[in-house]
Amino acid sequence: MNAEPVTENRLFNPEAETLAPDALRALQAERLRAVVARVAQVPFYREIFAREKIDPADIRTSDDVRRLPFTTKADLRENYPLGFLAVPRDRVVRYHGSSGTTGKPTFVAYTRNDVQVWSELCARFLVAGGLQPHHTCQIAFGYGLFTGGFGLHYGIERVGAAIIPAAGGQTQRQLMLMQDLKPEVLICTPSYALHLAEAIREAGLNDGRLALRYAHFGGEPWTEDMRAAIEKDLPILCFNNYGLSEVIGPGVSGECAWRNGMHIQEDHFIVECLDPATLEPVADGEPGELVFTALTKEAFPLLRYRTRDMARLYREPCPCGRTTVRMSRVTGRSDDMLVIRGVNVYPSQIEEALLRVDGVAPHYLIEVSRPGALDRVSVSVEMRPETFSDRMIGMQQLRQRIAHEIHAITGLHAEVNLVGPKTLERFAGKAVRVKDHRALS
Image (cartoon, rainbow, N blue to C red; front, top):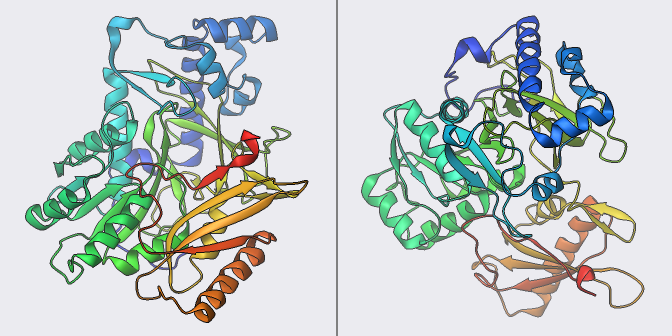
């Protein structure tokens, strides 16, 4: 646990964020009973309740959540577009959805109260990570069906700070806005922050001219080593937050000034951490799949939604005063875990290995193939401009160091390909880090 805070400790809603454990459990039980009664009218849940003989009246405590059915992304797709809607259409004020990269998007809906709750939950983690009303925030997230841009936008407004809705991409324009409007806070994906840091360094703007002090990153998994790399390139403090559109969007959890994990807003969500194979709870501190039940969502409440995100839960008291359970950063997904020659590997583990090696830029692409009977892993890694060289001996030594670190962390022997600066594609949104060619054969 970090011994010292990295910024001043602030709470947006002290009463809600520091509830005594007994009071929190009582509130969760009350809200769980209410949401189960609401979703009992949704055809998907009504049919399961009848089939499994689940009586909403039997749900009395927060522990009774384990008596309820799971909900999956496949269920949302099978009930496309709005089969989980729990209110009349005339009460809906907003629709959002996933990117739809694997097919049609999965839509979610919000009532006016849902939007108010959402804005407060985002305000909580933003304030915990340094945001104050006199600040200006540059949002370099995409706006649209994606929940990130709008969720953070309304959270910032709730705090009272100013917003530059720059949206994603157009890096040179982002730099112009940073110079001219002097935002103190940056909001984007961590992979895009790396790209911005590179552009800032090349433009010679990392000399104190920018006003950036804080950054809030979400939308994709990232490592502690990536945080260190970004903070080294830019004089800012980086904070992690977590959310997903099916539950509410950003605002499910976020880091406080101690950065000892992300505080989950348990007055609005019940979280479980389960073994993805057995669906039984894992011990605190052990990795498992996060499963969320939305307690206060009106338009689109989901019970026991399987996120496929792998993380750990921590219940030790935090010096910040918040009493909620904390989650680790997401280390990967239970459904995008790579199984290579019998070894379970997450892309974040390879990222961790790369960031241990000096002279390597934090841009990479993992490719898995099966040319014969065995899997083969290749990792393309960008070099920093100052280490790019045509000397074969130096490049071979760098390749060997990278391969050694990958093997030390994952147990895999990977083929390492060094590529020149700015060779790999940059992403304003979620970065594509893995190409598994085995699925194409």
